[in-house]
Amino acid sequence: MVNNSAKPHSAITASNILDMITRVLNKAAAIEKEPVDIGHGLFLYASEVHLIDMAGRYPEEGMSQIASRLGITKGAVSQTAKKLEEKGYIERANPEGDRKTVFIRLTERGMDAFLWHTAYHEVVNQNMAEEVEKLSARDIDTLFSILLRMETMLDNCPVVRNKITAQFIQKKLANPDTDI
Image (cartoon, rainbow, N blue to C red; front, side):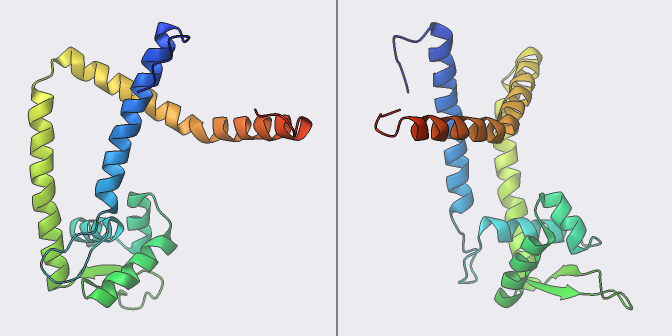
């Protein structure tokens, strides 16, 4: 954690909070990066498991709707579906007379992965529920408020990054021999 005594107390607190958020996000990202073998001798990556989950929960939806639910492009869904099809977890199907709509159907292996993912989230969600039960209603409201503010801050990060990068480059070009 950053503790620069030249900073005002609120800046130190903000820095410590950002350090903690970064640590939590890094831990979550590490979990998502770790592939899993659920007993078929094949690794499944997070993007594949999420697509299997969507196909299991929304079998009546096409790839476009699933892409929308996941917040990714139809092309990304198509690439992941191709990998899962090669691994034997899904089959792609078109409704009779409709070549545009593509549905993802779980195979037996895919259903195993879906059931594994469901069981995993039951435990994770139960653990989260137990932690939330320890909070007061006021703490929960405060937590939601903080998370909404964090979301807004993160939504603004690309704009801030571009602005600071442009300023940095401009200063560097104006003073190439100095450290900025």
